[in-house]
Length: 410
Image (cartoon, rainbow, N blue to C red; front, side, top):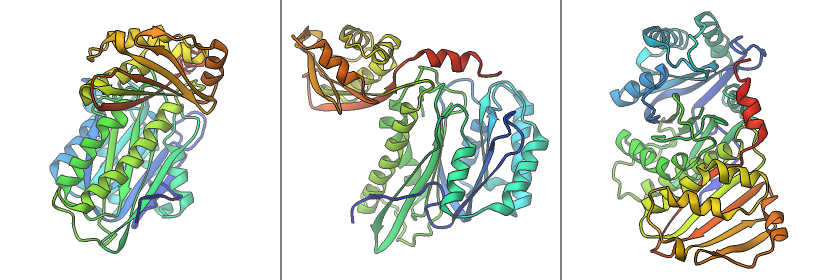
C-alpha cells in the first residue's frame, strides 16, 4: 500500500488524545494552551534549535529525550516563550511538569513542555496550572480535539497547521499525524517554530531519533521567513507502538524506509505550510537548485536565495529581478559557475526561462510578472555541475512583516 494523506492531525494515530484551553495567558482571551497525551508510554525523539540562546523548555525537553525515559504527554503554551528567564524559567518547567504528572497520573519524567511567544517574560504559573486542570478532563481523540489543539498553539500564524498520513506495514495500518506552528522568527537550523508529531508505529528509540534527525535536514532546515533562528525551535516525535507491527530495529528493514518516507511527507508539508504562512506574506516562494556537484552545495545555494531580503522583496513586487538571485548564490559559499547558470520562474501561470548560461534571455517582463503574481512561485536554478538537487521554501517580504513585528508585544 502506498502512503496516503488522510484527514487528521495530532490525534490521528491510535491512542493519542489532545485538549486545549483559554487559560488567560493571551490578552485576547483566545485559546493559548494545548495538551497532547498518549494512552500508553511512548518512545520520544526530538531536534532542537542551535541558537546559543535556548529557551527553558528546549533545555528541559532535550534532557527528557536524551534520558531514554518514556514520554507520555506534552504541555504547550502560546503567548510566553519562557526564554531568557534563567533558573526561574527552568523552575517553572519543573512546576509545569509536576502539575501535569499529578493531574494525569503519570511519571513526571514522561512529561514534555513547549512554549512560544514573547521572549523574556516569566510563565504565569497560576494560569499554566489552571490550564492543565481545565484540559485534562477534556482530553479526546476526535478530529475536533486535534484541530482545537493546533489552534491553541498559534501566535502570529494566520491558520492552524495539521497533517496526517497512513500506510500498511506487516498487515497493520500505521498512522503519523501532527500539528505545528510558525510564521515569524523562522530560520530553523538544528531544526517561532514548534512541531509535534505522533505515530502509533512500533520502532526502536534509536531509529526513531535517526529518522527525525536525518529528515529535518531537507525539510525544516530548508525554510526561512526572516533569517532569525528562534530560541524555541523544537520538533518532538512520539511513538506509542499501538499499530501492532513487529518492532523496527534494523535500519535495513523495509518498514524503516517506508516510515522515513511517510515522516518526510509530514515534515515537508509542515515546512511548506510554515514558509507559506510567513508573517505578512502573500506568496510561498520555492527555490529548487538542480545540477549541483554535492547535496550540500545544492542546499546552501537554495537556502541563500530564499533568505535574501532583496529577492524576497522582488517576489513581493512580482519583479523578475534575477540579478538578486545570482547575487545571493554568489555569497552563499556554495560551489557553482555563474557563467553556466540557467534560471527559470514557474507557477500555475506558466514557466519562463529568464537566464541562460549566466546571461538574460529575451524574456517577456509582462509574462514574468504574470507568473510571479501567483500565490505559489518557484525559482529553478540549474548550475550544471552534477546530479544533486535540493529545495528550499520561503516567502515574499512585505510591508506587513514590519507592521506585525513592530507591535508584536502591544
